[in-house]
Length: 306
Length: 306
Ligand SMILES: Nc1nc2c(ncn2[C@@H]2O[C@H](COP(=O)(O)OP(=O)(O)O)[C@@H](O)[C@H]2O)c(=O)[nH]1
Ligand SMILES: Nc1nc2c(ncn2[C@@H]2O[C@H](COP(=O)(O)OP(=O)(O)O)[C@@H](O)[C@H]2O)c(=O)[nH]1
Ligand SMILES: [Mn+2]
Ligand SMILES: [Mn+2]
Image 1: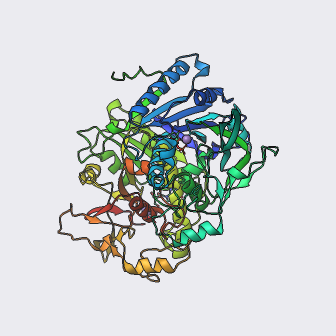
Image 2 (image 1 turned 90 degrees about the vertical axis):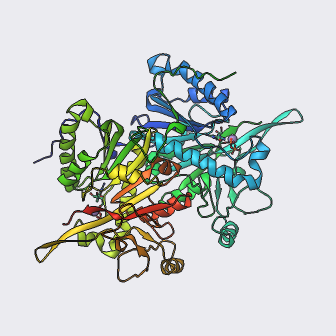
Image 3 (image 1 turned 120 degrees about the vertical axis):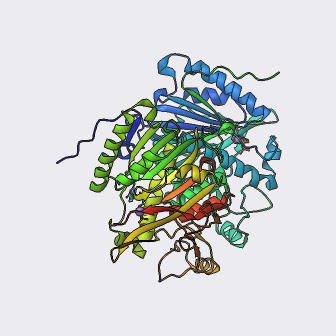
C-alpha cells in the first residue's frame, strides 16, 4: 500500500529536497534566492542596485554580517535604516526575510585599500573574511533556498538583471568580471579590480609544491608571478557578454552559487587549502566536491574607487 | 554620542554573535541545542533516549535527514508519528523546532552491517554520509544555536545527561566512546563498535604520504594496519568517566560540537582531505581551523546490534 504521509504537527517543517530546483529559469520555478553580504561599509549605490534587482522580493532573503568596529556600527545603523524603509513599506515590496549578524571576532588589519592589499597582511585578513563568510552562510541558508548570491557592499554598479543573467548559465558556481572606474587626466577609464578569478598554471602548481603546508599563493603581486590566466585580462569589450570560461579560482565580490553546492559542503577555507584561502580556496573546494566553477570575462560589475 | 540602534522592522532578525555563548553550564546561560540525526532506520530506543534528555525542550531544535528509499520512507513515517505525539502535546513539552529533510540523492551500497563495512564500499558510502550530514547542518544551523549534538539513529543507549555531561568539558568538539552489546554463550558482553575516534600514528602519516591524492586511510581493517591509538581500546571500565584524551579522528555516532566551530567552516569532507573523509576528515578540518577535538574513553554510548 502507498505510504500516506501523516499530517504535519505544529513546528515540524518537512522539506523534500527533490523539489528544490535551481534552474536556468528561476522565476518560472519560483526559486528562492539568498543574497549574502559581508558589510563593513554601507554604500548607497550598492543598496540602490540591490533594490533594483528584478526578481520578486518575496523570493529573496537577505543576510549580512557586520564587524563590531566603529565603522561597522555606523554601517549597521545605515543598513538598518535602509531596511526599515523597505520592510515597513507595502507588503509586496518586502524581502521575505532579513538577518543581520554582528560579528564576534575582529579583523586583523586596517581599512585603506593599500593596507588591505599589502601581501603579508593578506593571509590573515582573508582568513578572517573567510570566517565571516562561513558564519553568514552556515546560519542563513535555510532548507528552502535554491540560490546564493554573494555580493560585496562596495560593488557599486550591477545591472538589475544580475541574478537572472547569471542564473541563465545554469552553472554550479559562476562569477562576473569585477572592474573599477577611475579618472585619468579628467577622463573616466576602467581597469580590472579583482584578480581572484583565474585558470591555474603549471608555474603556480609548482610554486605550491615547494611551499610549506601553511604558505599561500596570492594573485596580483609582482613578487610572486604565477602566470595564471587571469579572467581580469580576458575581457573583450566587444565580445559576447555570455562568453564563459572555466575557472580554478574565483573572486567573491559578486558570485552566484547554487545552494546545493554549499549544502554539499562548500565553504571558504580559513586555512591554506591547496595553498589557497577564502574565495580562491572555495573554488578549489567546489572542484574537490566534483563541480566546475565558471566565469564571464565580458560581463562586468564595478567596485567602488576609494 | 552613543549609537542608539533603531527599532527593528518586521522580518529583520538582528543577532549579536557575542551573546551566543557555549559554556560548561549551558542551562544557566539558556544555550540552544540543535540535535542532528541522519536517519535511515527508526529505533524506539533512540527515540526514548532523545525524549529523556534532561534539557528544556524549548531550548532544543531537532533536524533529520532521511533517504528516499523504501526503508527511508518507513523510517520517516515512524519519525513523523513519534514527533506528532510530542509536538501536539502540551506546549512546554514541545521541541522548539523540527526539520525533516528528504534527501535528493541516493546512497551507493546495501544495508547489512557486513555490506556497509566492506572496505571498498566504505569510501563511496562515507562520502554520501558526509554529504547528508553537510546538507543537514548547512540548512538547520540558525543563528541562535550554541551547540550541535550529532546522534545516529541506531545509538540505542545513552544517559539522559548526555548533552550536559559532554558540555561540561567545555571543548570545541567532544566524542564519547561507542560500544556494542552482544550475547555470547547466553551471556551479555560488550565490545568496541566505532573505530573512527583515534590519535594519529607515524605509520598512518607515512601511509598517507605514499598514497594518491584521492586514496583514503581507513580504520579497523586488517589489510591496512595504521597503528593509530584507537579510543575504542583505551577504555578503562573502572576509570573516571570524565577522563579526556586528545583526538585526531572522531566518530559521528554521538558527537558534540560547539556551533561556532561549524560556523567557522567545519564540514564533513565528501572528498579525501588529508586522506580522510566524513567524521574523520571533520576532525582534521577542526584541527586545521585551529581547534583540538577530544574524546572520553570511559564514557560509553551503545550502538544497536543487528
Ligand atoms: N563582516 C565583515 N565584513 C567586512 C570586513 N572587512 C570588509 N568587509 C566587507 O567584505 C567585503 C570585502 O571586503 P573589502 O575590504 O572590500 O575587500 P577587497 O575589496 O577585496 O579589498 C566588502 O563587502 C566589505 O564591506 C570585516 O571586518 N567584517
Ligand atoms: N540520510 C541518510 N541517513 C543514513 C543513510 N544510511 C544510514 N543513515 C543513517 O546514518 C547513521 C549512520 O549510518 P550507519 O549505517 O548506522 O553507519 P555505521 O553504523 O557506521 O555502519 C545512522 O543514523 C543511519 O540511520 C542514508 O542513506 N541516508
Ligand atoms: Mn572591496
Ligand atoms: Mn550505525
